[in-house]
Image (cartoon, rainbow, N blue to C red):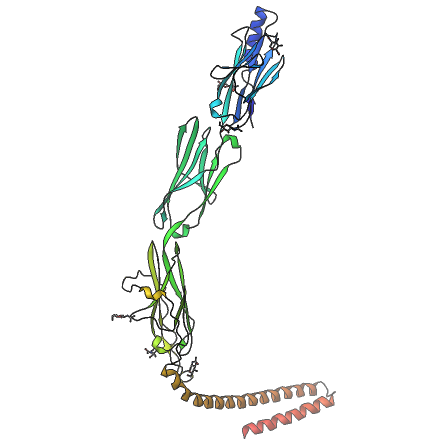
Length: 433
Ligand SMILES: *[C@@H]1O[C@H](CO)[C@@H](O)[C@H](O)[C@H]1NC(C)=O
Ligand SMILES: *[C@@H]1O[C@H](CO)[C@@H](O)[C@H](O)[C@H]1NC(C)=O
Ligand SMILES: *[C@@H]1O[C@H](CO)[C@@H](O)[C@H](O)[C@H]1NC(C)=O
Ligand SMILES: *[C@@H]1O[C@H](CO)[C@@H](O)[C@H](O)[C@H]1NC(C)=O
Ligand SMILES: *[C@@H]1O[C@H](CO)[C@@H](O)[C@H](O)[C@H]1NC(C)=O
Ligand SMILES: *[C@@H]1O[C@H](CO)[C@@H](O)[C@H](O)[C@H]1NC(C)=O
């Protein structure tokens, strides 16, 4: 992507031509063009000749070492090649250009020391995709400091921080080392846990890239203390039911271990723990108590508790059950008074055949409940039958009257309706009896 610029082409030429006209009829002149090329690319250095008369043409590098002496290589550097030598144009190429090749290349006619021109070679170094460095770990409530860096460019690249399509102004800095620039842009802002995972990007702009840009995407990693919530079972629990609690844990980093415990007591033997779930099959009232789920990471610890109340099932049909168990409080409190013992982590799975006595008691209650239920059902059925019968009677009467009004065309139906009406009145009598 080298672009050449015609440099001082017309004005000096005019001057020289005028000067030449004054001196001799046949006057030679040389013109050089400035060149800009990407690092690693190939530069073309051209010298234009005017009225060339076969004089020796010398091309020199910025250190004034002769590269070519009238078309013959003088300096041993294979990167330079003479590609054209005509009476109008002398052109050499330089491959794998480095920033050290920058400078003025001389095109000179040996006949006259004044007839030389300088082609300035500029090397452009576009930036690589920038890198992002985090100065300090982001913790919720604190600040994050991010530095976007582009270690090498020429001319200096411009770096911009973008979040949600908007630029975040930062502190830019620039350093020169061996003709190239190292640039950086540092931003600093407070972070909350909602910022965790937020997308940012650092964009590098450079003349050699044109409208394109080099983009580094970055996701914020905000550390925060855990939160813990026990998802409670719905409804009330009775003896023989099974309990299943789920502890939903958040935090960055996500706590690895979830600890279950029972306040002031050891966990029941039948408790089954598998990570965030806690289960007890066949509850008994001895399981009453407050259960705790705890989690911690480097930034803190949290716990939630659930109070279990197991109701006996003797009173299923006779008493109104209490409206609810104690609702689990989603409050997250740092636990200091109830440190979890390490044994709590080992799942205890030992189903015991012996059931609590309370379960046995309930047998006696069943016959009474059944008899009561059957009686209630019987009374309900009788009432339903009566209601249906009355409803039918009223409906048929209505239909009979309608037919009468229409002129009694359909005798069968009327008769039927009449009979039905009779039935209904009989039913009514029955009901009255
Ligand atoms: C060519 O480069 C030289 C040195 O950088 C500068 O002085 C001159 O103005 C340039 N010419 C053109 C036409 O850009
Ligand atoms: C220089 O090279 C050109 C082109 O090859 C040639 O025409 C000219 O005679 C040479 N000049 C001398 C002095 O050798
Ligand atoms: C180009 O030049 C660099 C040093 O300037 C060198 O490391 C590299 O190997 C060269 N590449 C080729 C293809 O010659
Ligand atoms: C645990 O025991 C302590 C002291 O015996 C008592 O104050 C506290 O209320 C008990 N907690 C529960 C949930 O039973
Ligand atoms: C368990 O809780 C229920 C509901 O409050 C209560 O009726 C029962 O007496 C409790 N049992 C024990 C052993 O604490
Ligand atoms: C209630 O008690 C009976 C008799 O012990 C038992 O079979 C049943 O599982 C208990 N629980 C429920 C929810 O019915």
